[in-house]
Length: 111
Image (cartoon, rainbow, N blue to C red; front, side, top):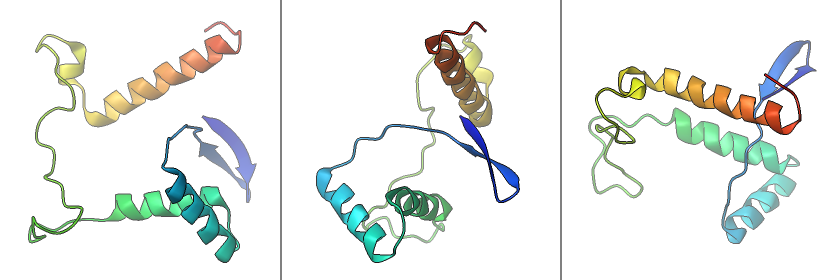
């Protein structure tokens, strides 16, 4: 996670790698040029738009892109496993901390 000062307040960014189809990247870069924006901004806007989309209970199941909401855990674990009692937010924080620790070790620093 990177922290930097922008517009008088601290902004946190997480660098990540995502594999995308070439054609999708070309379209996004073309859109960025058309809008005089950056590729990163186009991807961020699209991701935010997708995450803000709220499907109502009346959304037809046959609508393109519709997916049944998850009701099962994303991974299987024994009932005695610590993760079985963790909330999604706690799991995300644990993953974030694990990735941060790994980055620190790779940079040659101790924890």
